[in-house]
Length: 218
Ligand SMILES: [Zn+2]
Image 1: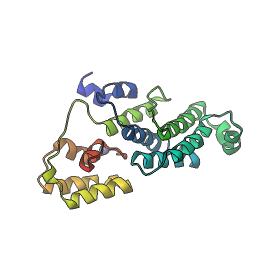
Image 2: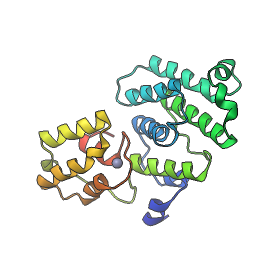
Image 3: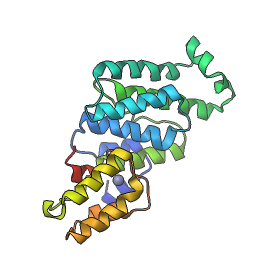
């Protein structure tokens, strides 16, 4: 696969297959959470959304394994359409189209797997083309381009830029990434891959490869 093919690819399995370095548990959790937030958020019920939040806290070491297991079971209840509690809580489920039903179940499954002590990424086929395309995009956003290895000169980071990066990460204020790019450029940053990524008119999620580089997270 060439770099251009990878960047244009709408098959998440093919995108993931090119990631050479084995991703950390943190990255796997955040990629799964990114998929839940960007693709399935509307499909997820409150309890499964809470599982996503637990997985995000686990990624940063702020939630215990016990919390993770409870969140795994809570999300999985929605992944099993035959359970009594599922039918009680999701009465409207029967009215969904089969495609939306499938998406709903995958979303819950994905949220659950993100909470598992050894998280796994669902890379198999998950429904319609549009959702698959977005999943491929989330993978590129979290794992970064395997054809490049952008580096950052630390002298273009000062306490102000790091504070702004931390704020963006914790508050999910990704709309402020162009402001961060501006501030870094003023400090003499010439890492075009990173600056361009922050200015892209696209979505970013927690685990964004470029923001992680600045915050020294992997
Ligand atoms: Zn990003």
